Image 1 (cartoon, rainbow, N blue to C red):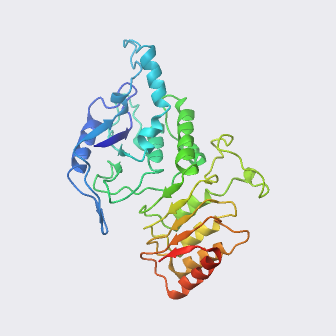
Image 2 (cartoon, rainbow, N blue to C red):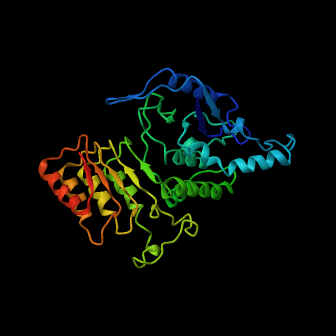
Length: 349
């Protein structure tokens, strides 16, 4: 059974879907996903299971009164709603949930003119980006990220995870019905980044259609902001004391496995990765996966140069995978082998 978390905009402040348009789009998307397989290149994904459990906020959570004539829901349900809102990121970011984004379900403006499109709303923007932080894109299962507006038969292309500072900037132009939710959303996103990126032992960003620009954007977030760059032996700020505006990915000191497999990053993508690795970056990394990345000989030489730096960079690195379509020659492999031999690093490929 699949657990579906639905992300959608509200058509009005009183009711998210008074005319049932979003519900019809969602039902059609689910039945279509259960009937067709999505393919891309040589890979084909499974269909969505026939049994699904659906999380839809309006139906799944206690709701406060939306009109004056509605009675209050009581202390117990109110406390339950507040508790649920402080954990909303779990429904979307969890690696075992499947997210359906109803990005254009409410194309008609509500009668009072209050409807705001999906990508202009605060909560949907948060849900859209927090969902893509850690989910795997693998053909061994069904697609876990589905943009209903683009079509169920279109494979979701996961972009680079936003830093909390980037999300904060993005949310400045988005609409929240309750202005206090802006701070809550940022806090939830920060917690998710701390858990799923900063505190992760494995980060798998395979088959995301990332190129050199995406690798550069993600790797640059490993560079600490200026206020953290003191001396090399000075303690770095912990996640708890980093504000939402400054927190980046520079504290990934638990990461042991990192994969960019099956992304067309090329030599310039490898160079972008290596340029952003400092002497204290990813100190526990053991496995680096460049499978099927078209890295070329220039990419291998960039890795070799990184491994020769002093003091040693990636000091715990044990294995580099360069199998698959990487357009390398014996000359490029020889350059990498020499650098790895001096460090006792194994090359797969």
